Length: 177
Image (cartoon, rainbow, N blue to C red; front, side, top):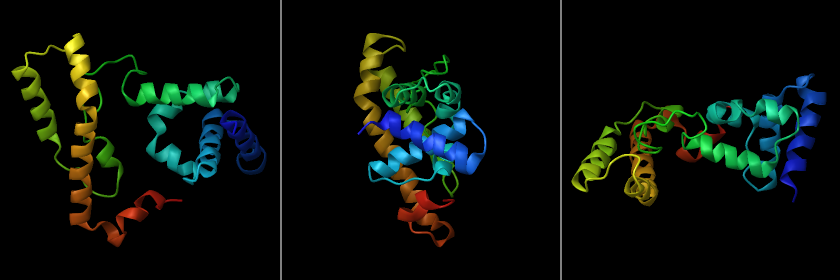
């Protein structure tokens, strides 16, 4: 399936039927909603604007000019998600820098994830790994999944304990649609 064409067709339809004007960022959210529907993971345009505003907002202009392919969008989004698209590298690459940020998006308070940052710092010190070195890059890529898994488990546990607004966790991603 040609996801680039699908994105732009959905955006153009939204411009004509819903939005009433051409607006790249809004079109991008409608385009992504169409692609998510096509791959069997339906999400409303609001989902993308609410949960993924930061990485997508900078791509609205290119999308409006229809110069952004789906493949390039995914590459850019991936780079921005990991902190590289901003040009500001944090002391530790995502997900080690501000692991609590993604958990604050939900309908519950932020879990304390500072323990992950401390553990990573302790491990870097113990192995005498300096930031910016090849060993550091290897360490980050090797351990990223462990950090994400630990943060996700902690956040899910906190959410379950809080029994947020009596919504089952499986329905949290559908709130606001």
